[in-house]
Length: 118
Image (cartoon, rainbow, N blue to C red):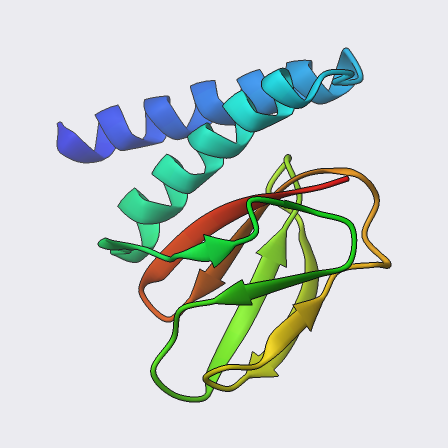
């Protein structure tokens, strides 16, 4: 029964995301809402249990993340597609200049956070 509920929830979330994309999300608030859903789904599906500290919350150039050692980092857009994967070490900034403006999630190990690209 739990698997049926998860499958149904996953289908509903997928449908919601596709509808949101079809409506061409214009505001950062809408994109941020979709990003929250993606973070929640990632947390449930991948056993992510901690929030990743990301700063600044809004940027045009670079973001920093709070990690203790070298990690593979994934950056996902507001519809959950991976747009960038790279290795990042403690204290290293991540260049996001090439990303289009919008809301993004960052996953490093079992942590996930978010930022907005201006």
